[in-house]
Length: 379
Ligand SMILES: Cc1cc2nc3c(=O)[nH]c(=O)nc-3n(C[C@H](O)[C@H](O)[C@H](O)COP(=O)(O)O)c2cc1C
Image (cartoon, rainbow, N blue to C red; front, side, top):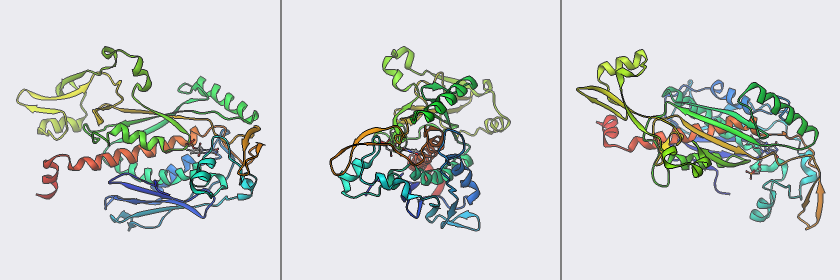
């Protein structure tokens, strides 16, 4: 089975199935010297855990991580970092009834046709549990990004078709999701992710555009059916005059500078992309709007990166469904087990982590973009 590796420089390989002995990730390409311990990663894992609110399955998953390699005396050594989570609450018997059934909305039929044999326990490799490994790697990526002052934050913005960015919306969505649980049904939603303090020019045209890489990363998460950057699908109905983001040259004195930036400006530091340090003073090119969502021509444009991931309803529902089995019989199934009426809240951190991995990988790729970068390191 190919397709378990993501990233070029910060390379992430995930392994494991939902009911196997363990799941995990090997990170290749993490720079040496990063202070790293289990405590940096565990809070991210806990955000993904089930059983945290009424919407999520009461299935008990401890999800304690172990760093197996790549860290010595609290710092990364530059060697592969292996992180593992043992599967504690396996309960395969919940799934034995479904061993030869193709569950609607799941990967069962594809796995059966592709390999002729499948691990039917809880979706095996295509289980939402696989995302644990991505979250572990994403926590490491986010830690590196935070040292560069780049932040990645995701939040649930829509649940069951209801805008949840206000307390009233959250309450309405909560009621709706609880009602759906009673009805043995499920709902989808939207996660919005923001990347701030992103340097300009990051992303590799043409095949590895930053938006293309982000779409790859996010669409690889189970249950994601669409990804938008900036205004997304709305742009097809906008006019050019509405959609174009203007550029504006702003003299640094006019900006609301922090103390540090003030000092940098006084020192004539022109390392930042887009700055023009001539005699008349420094200017910075900024965007006057952000319909593009921070990415133009496949490269970051310095504005906030705004990405939305659209999730489908949880496919495992207890409501009776028509389907077929491996013997070619048409049957009715009622999925037992324990499943979330929506996966969106638990998937939120997965979106954040896949974004962090992608952004870090693109930043690392950019380190060979100019001769000056190589001279800075090697001369
Ligand atoms: C964090 C997370 C948790 C998930 N949990 C469940 C679950 O408990 N039950 C379920 O039926 N699907 C769950 N899914 C979704 C399925 O894994 C996914 O829909 C299925 O493998 C089919 O793949 P596709 O929807 O990407 O086509 C979860 C997804 C994520 C990202």
